[in-house]
Image (cartoon, rainbow, N blue to C red; front, top):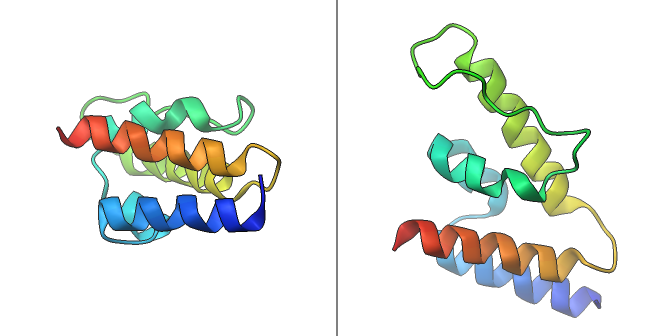
Length: 96
């Protein structure tokens, strides 16, 4: 995919969520972050182990997941634009 395709995919996502990906992940619900976790590299992913948001380690685990998703979003390879569009589609389905 070309740089133009990557930018177009990022613009589609920004339009969908109303913010850039970094800002979006900062405020996204955990269920949506977990739905997006399939796009993170297997070695990068730490899925939150605690369903209870009041658990002391919950925010730490959420932070790790957010970092893994941001890394997946920024990773430069031939599939970047396709991956970004797939991530936007997951967000779109979640919001319906």
